Length: 267
Length: 361
Image 1: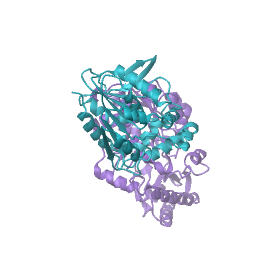
Image 2: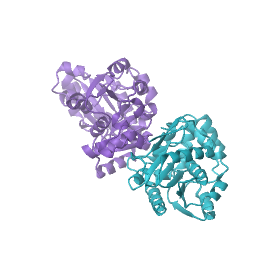
Image 3: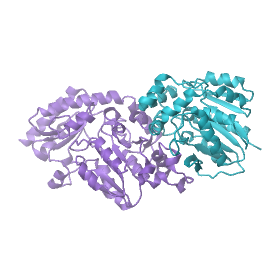
């Protein structure tokens, strides 16, 4: 699905289904250096089980036009405008890593139609980025891709849950194929984001914090601390996986997303 | 295998030939064209030369050392360039980076058969290849016990931008209208290969076969080291024998691809090579039959050392002229060096050479 906004053309994966006004829409927002297909093990399921879906490519990423944004608030503003053009009865926002910050900020300022739920996967706040990684992202992107790929996966060899695909290879390839400057812009946005506390305080919809128990990029204890202070939060840890839990634990992520979103589906 | 090759994923197939067929069937249909090296495995040559044309897919063969010929063979309908890292029988080394650059300039992917080198000796994705196939029957399994193949994808090739691949960049009615390039931006080829090719053609690997090959992979690195060490000793031995007229091994300075092999294959040029005995066809036959440790087999990449004399076995129906055109002399012998004690192999080769000399007079 192509979406026109301010003279640019953006992409949303919909599994080939045009959005319907009588259905809830699940919107997926990817993380730094990623793109819509990082959700391929989850998004398609919802499209075939009664939901509209929109797995977005953020501006300047993969199939989306527009300029790269290096500010979470700007990405959130863009997301709200895109959602307004997608349509649907009600919305569920799902974000991973940087995408979780974007979804959080967008949810805090969400305007009708109603936001039914918010899911923050691989979330931490603050999401500070080590200077070594930021410098590599600016000066030597392949080195940054390698660091992120290694740090994002719990240490294990073999036993891939998705037949025929190797999660570290997929992640590295996604970053390698990203637009020049994308990884630095994205990581800079994560590092600079300072609106998390205020945004969390304004969220009143049901919120799921979903974390990999072995996450080294966004330690689960950060999400746990925020979830404990949130009146309407679910906190779920998935064992034996790290920050790339969308592909490290695709079935566990889908199970938790299904359970949570079904529970909060609009009437 | 995807990790060893540094790709995004892979598909295990019933054989190496099934992997090649799956790659072709995923990328193209009738009216398409392939450019292939002419120094490839005979089974691959048969598939491309004789079988696929019946289904509307033609192949132009070009010498692997002739980039101009490869470029000249490319047509608007070309959807694949295919070659082996080290070819047979001449040990031709494909200049993978140069061929990849040429392929990409035309929006065509490069598929490399890396069976002889394995990821231990050469990783084609690091040199520009887009797809890799293996006959896992050989070194990956390592013991000649099962038949299998593997196909891996790098994830860098832009199928949509190429404009040549509707199978990956347009909706596919056979799978809910899926556009594979959008569904999996990094692994579109593998996704279609699995969801169409494995489903419809059915050439999948059995679980038992997968077990044996995985077991083989656990020792791949130390086996390849030993294969390589033994091969160098055997090559040196044959080099010093006056019964040997010629050796085609890329590590030798006189080999036309020596410098390229030094650059691309610093760990070694593998354990399969050909040499030519003086004394013609009868000497070749006597040599082969005189060996006691080498197994007389058409296979390669076994833990056991293997020998074949093409002129009296696999190619015995060919005329002398046809043999020469294929780069095979009457006395050409192919060896696949195994993991035995090197001294035992040299002693066995001495035995074979002694028999060959008796026949040659």
